[in-house]
Length: 232
Image 1 (cartoon, rainbow, N blue to C red):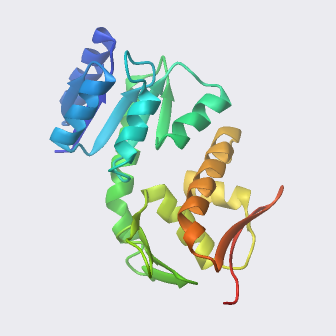
Image 2: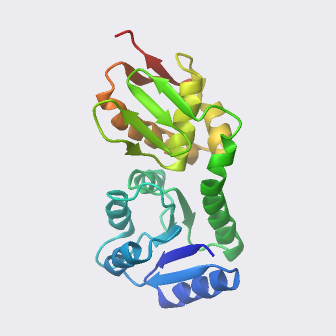
Image 3: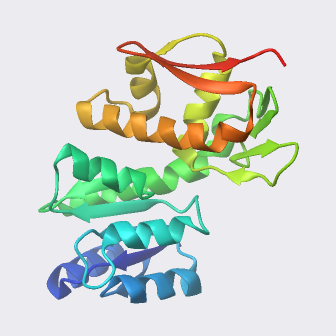
């Protein structure tokens, strides 16, 4: 039974979500604020976090950043009344995997939860008949373990989407991959908000790859992205 941590300060909405998820067969832990939510996360190790942005004390973005300091793989779904592009981008930058604007339908919430949970479980099979380990420059990418390894440091843990994006770029090494193709392949939607989300994920990958002096992700403005390997 998947375990979900719901961090939401509004009592009526919290109980409504809890009761509906419970009926769907999920085990649900609840927290009314960010600090209690963080404590529950450490204690319960959930499979997914549903996180309200506007919380008393620690807001949702701060909570997500705290979680990502020691856990990079558990999906985080933001609930938010904010829908401006910069707010959505801030959510992804803080470590979120998806967002749902209030008010929302419970059916849409259930679908998004299913996609996030199923996406994690399907990763291993999605690469089962293909190469699962890739090497480019000083970087070794293990798609099944969702890790990148450098010869002189510990492995960096990736999220599912970071892994899928990096695999796509590495498979097309030294070739521009059009932005629309990336969005359709990984997000299944090339909307403006997903395009901004892609930019955030590219920034994350560039940060991870900084120590690899012979590897770089470059942007051809208005076209797409390419990972290149420079001669040593």
